[in-house]
Length: 228
Image 1 (cartoon, rainbow, N blue to C red):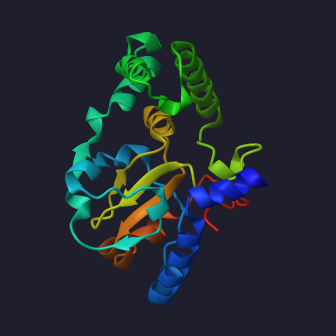
Image 2: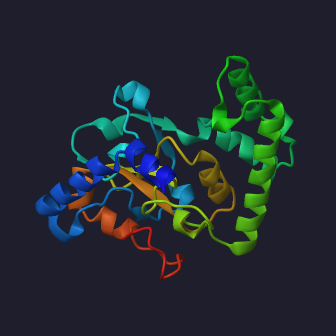
């Protein structure tokens, strides 16, 4: 219970609930919800939102925000992403994790006193990557990615914690921070869709009906509560 309360405070749920109410008053039934699930096809996502160039971080607590302007024009090519490259090296080309750029990157961060993905040692990194191998094989066998609300013993509000994705004015999805390895699994397996957490949506995309297109899943269980 205390852990759930702390998570609510950390993720600024109170602000998100207020934003949901404002969105409903402004946009009615088509209003986006904070932390709601959307279901893009992974390989349709070709860019990452470049918050550094935009000088505008749009982190998870901004989920469900409707925003006009040119923020969505700041992009980086997804093909340059170190984590995605490393996952292809591992799961497509059969490389050891120690041969991938993400391995050395994480060790360098640990050497600087950081804890990437809560890893403090090389052993922690190897254990994490071994678990990713397991998730990859489980997802491959299942044929779809689990939504956060389907993870046993985990508590998430809607789709909070899934791969974080913004919707640009042209309806394209931009991957943002969070869920990079889950995205890589879905991308490598070329899944027809994956559960993602809605980030910021451009006003033009909302008006064009792109959210309605992306909020419908053909694969998620009917009882899944991520979008509600």
